[in-house]
Image (cartoon, rainbow, N blue to C red):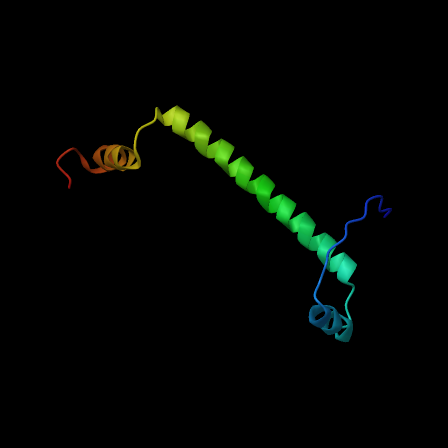
Length: 80
């Protein structure tokens, strides 16, 4: 894999010292973290679009109204 961009982060000396004590590939860990955060944001955006679409399909009814309609369709209008 070829990397074309570089980012710079600043750490305090204590954190940097502790990082050196741990045998891990910090660059790879940070890349994976960033990728995961991007995927989370994409999933949230996708869920928001789906929620908005469903809201439009329901006609803007409140959650209470939707639940009432579902219960009425299952159990009749005299259920409470």
